[in-house]
Image 1 (cartoon, rainbow, N blue to C red):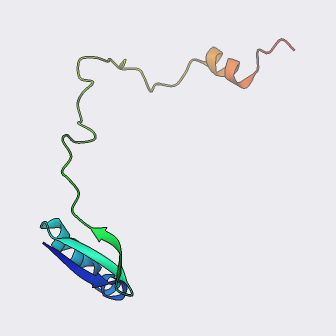
Image 2 (image 1 turned 30 degrees about the vertical axis):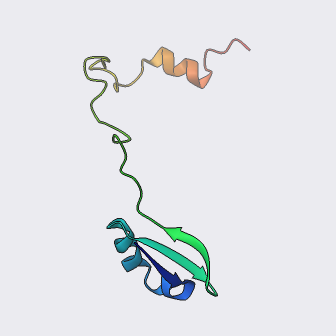
Length: 84
């Protein structure tokens, strides 16, 4: 089943039209009586875009991962030991 609405009505009633489309109704949007768009529900996705926890037991982070770097390594980043 489908309903035809003009653009002005679609703008003022968008939320309710989206609800109707989500329930399976097809909404035809017309400009000056000429159909220009169709509002329909999206098909459900087959799986979530992201499933948390997929890296368990595959990676390891050292307990000192976020400890400060040793001075000699910090010096290398700052260019203090640069032979130039």
